[in-house]
Image 1 (cartoon, rainbow, N blue to C red):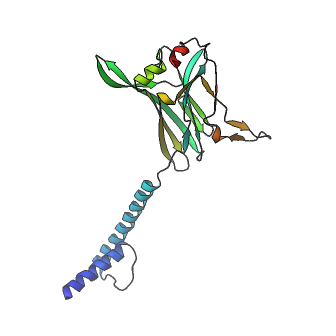
Image 2 (cartoon, rainbow, N blue to C red):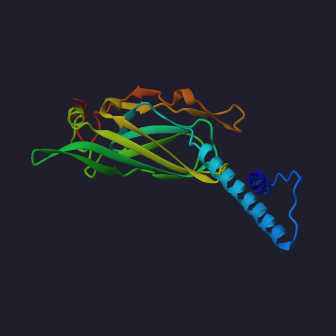
Image 3 (tube, rainbow, N blue to C red):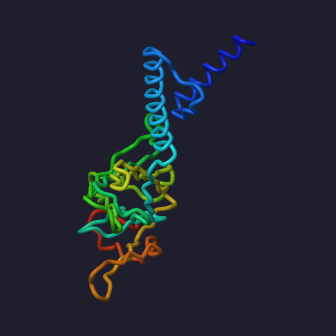
Length: 235
């Protein structure tokens, strides 16, 4: 019993020192015992600080709070057409150095073998300094685009999907945030154009963004497109 009591006393004294509780019932005597107790207290503080940082980083991971339009659209662009999708921050407006990337994934027949292929889609503007209003991503469908010459039927047969990846710096957390979404061929509208979703206030001092308008589009005539036959694409 004596040995067990001594071991339990030493254990509880050590845990009290490690957690810096220090009830004061026991105290180290002599230089070496005081040195050991001091080192254990320092180690306890460092361990608790490290654990706090790890838990905070794990459970308070910053989110981008970006809302994407439900549909991608095929709309007029310069003398041709482009595929577009829109995004806007709905809670956090402290995003800077935003960078977007588009990738087209589709099933391709190579030597009678179905293979998944991924193509990078160049954007008209892939980076913005600050993301406070809406941002429409634009990929021109020209001779260099993987979409060129494909109809909606072709996209359906290839199980085409456009993957959107967005990375930005969150000033509030001093950390990068990442979000992503995708659009299948059923979610691509041909012959549409986004309706502006922000406007100036009456006094002209600020800008109001209407988040409920993020999916708003109106039909447009694509017959004047010079880059490809849109009637064939819509077929």
